[in-house]
Length: 630
Ligand SMILES: Cc1ncc(C[n+]2csc(CCOP(=O)(O)OP(=O)(O)O)c2C)c(N)n1
Ligand SMILES: CC(=O)[C@@H](O)[C@H](O)COP(=O)(O)O
Ligand SMILES: [Mg+2]
Image (cartoon, rainbow, N blue to C red):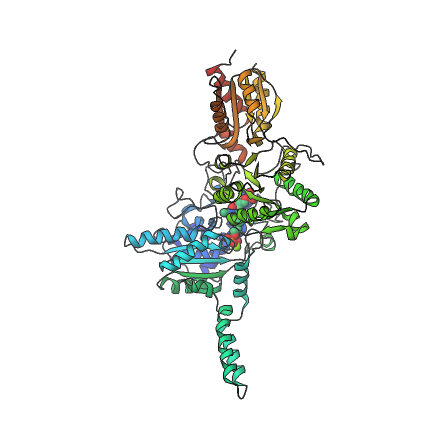
């Protein structure tokens, strides 16, 4: 039987579709999503949940004239399939293939790029304001999930949009899930809306009850009126949004295409901002994802029949798992340790901690800024808050780290997971800026472990230190280091000299220590004696060791998986400059001053010369240009 999908090359191709055809197309799209993501990995469950919504949006509106802004953008696959990217959808998240997120450079249908949450309403407002200033006519639609609605920026935007009364539509895609179960008072409010009987029905019931009482006094009648008023706040769906200046529709079934089309038609004709609250099932149409939407939120390649993740067997535990075990162990001994996640209890390895210490665990929702300042508050009262956030998302909380934590020199520990190159999520998610945006902040200690065992020791050291600390480590498995059961306290600012070399010394940090050791072996085969230092600390630097290397070899190579601009190598350069070690030659290896594309982590590290051979080649070339100081 021929597939409707095969003739979909742009949104115009579904304009004439009947309801039956749209529903058949929805089925075919689901099949394509499942089969593709089973191979490439990606955000399956969020996309399965928005198939009908996306079809309705493209049927009702005219993209690219009308603008869709997808919050986070992890649910934009269906939009991509409908907007000219069906035939290369199989390249999703692969090298040179299409991105897993909306990207302006990729398509004129991607009105606004994303990857981080809670930006869509602000962006939509900006676009709508520009439209009105230019006297143009088109529709602007932001699609935001209930999880992303826990992020503060979304409220800043709602507040401003309601105040301005600009024409735009916000679709609230409520599936009761962030990556994990959604949290917070707003989430509870949405739940009440989903389940509450409608206001008018309750009001009717009260009126009926009153009429059945023969005579009531004046004061009772007044009290009942007041009760009806406050019931309105409880039961009129969306009153919160209405009070903010939006016209609210919903909650409606987000898998019912005619219903969505009907509400969108009404929304289109309303003057001022509109919010359409749809209720969807994350993972709809693929049983393993419906049963476990968290697992299929963002998933690696899997077996379609069973839903089992395809894992490389025998891989050592991930840094995340090692951290998750270490924090539990430390918390057993130290009751002041508390843990905070911004909506990622599983991704950050805090699930066991949450189960074991529910009163000492806080999931704040997608609210990194709040997480950091709340941690600062906890620290003022003697608690030891461990804020576990991906490197890329802590970017949100720069000022909170600076102003609330470091300025007051509070002992908050930042566990920056997914630092360096993360892989297929790409430019929005690589954690390659943290050394640069943290190391100029006074008081903070910044460490990066060379292996999993050192991660444990660094965490332990941080809990014993009365100062702000950031520990950054990469995505995925460690190097397979043996995990010691007793943790060792590290001397602050002291590097580990792994091997000496008279020609050059590689000052490596974190995940790049291992490839540097391999690079030294490659160089040794070529007769070049390269020493390797595990720097451990990005701040404070081991000045004594740097001075020693400067004297001994006169050539230092710094190696990091951060952008070179302002990173670890820059710190070393600043140091040699401040010490007037002006004969030293410093080669800085790291990531270039550009946004790094998506692709497998190892492929990207190779591409940017941060694998053993690439490091060895760069060192050899550098030595051939500048020679070793004899
Ligand atoms: C600032 C920021 N913090 C954390 C994340 C990680 N993250 C991506 S999607 C997501 C959950 C989003 O939930 P929701 O908006 O409800 O979308 P759903 O997946 O349920 O459709 C989170 C926490 C992010 N992308 N951006
Ligand atoms: C969309 C998003 O921001 C997250 O889902 C992210 O992709 C998770 O990354 P990990 O797979 O590394 O946990
Ligand atoms: Mg959700």
